[in-house]
Length: 267
Picture: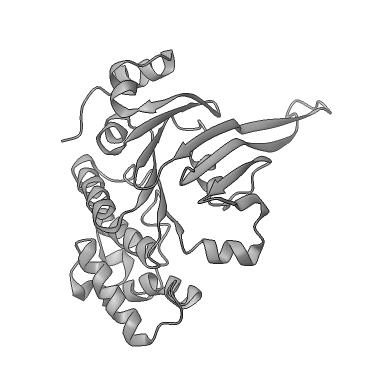
C-alpha cells in the first residue's frame, strides 16, 4: 500500500459571469482528474510553470483546500471521509512549508513562539508538553535547521529571507511530522540561499525519515532533490516517473520544454 495515494483529484473554481455581459457562468479546472502515489521516505517532485495547479494540488492533499471530487488515501486512511476532529489529529503528521518566508510568519511573534505554537495547539503531537519540553524542542529544532540558540528571542524581521525560511521549516517539524508538502520553498530566495535550503531539506529527510511532496517551477531543483518527478500542465499530470527517466528520456513535449528552458543542474 502506498504511503499516500491521490485518486482522480479535481478542483473546480467558479469564475462568475462573463466580464463582457454574458449571462453564462464559467469555471476554472485548476486540478483536473489527477492521480499519483508517493512512497514512504521518498521525494516526489511536482514541477510545472506558474498557474499549472501545483500549489492547489498540494494544498488539497492536506485538505487546506477542499477538493471538488476525488480521494486522498494517507497511510490507508481516506482523508475525504475524515471528520474535522480526525483531520486535526492527522495534521500532526502532515505539514506544509510555505513559499513566502515573510508572509507565513507572524511578525508580532518571537521565533520561540512561532515554533512552539503548533505544540501548544496540538499538545506536542505525542500528548501534553510542559513549558520546559517546548523550550527544549525549540532548541533542538533551531539547531536542526542551522540557526543559533539566540534566534529564539528575536522577531522575523530581524532575519534574512533564507533564515526566515529556516524558521518556517523548524515550525513545520515541530510535531514530528511524517509527510511535508514543500510549496515552492525557495522561489522567493536567491540562487545560493535557495541551494542551501534545498540541501537542508535533503539532510532533514535523512535524519527524520521524512516523505516530501516538493513543488517547484524549477526542473533543476526538482531533478536534484526528487526521487521521482511528476510534470503538471494546465491542471493535469502529463508525465510521471523516476527522476533519471524524466530528465534523460522525457516522453511529453511539455516536459522537454521545461528541461530545455532550465538545463543547469543544482550543485
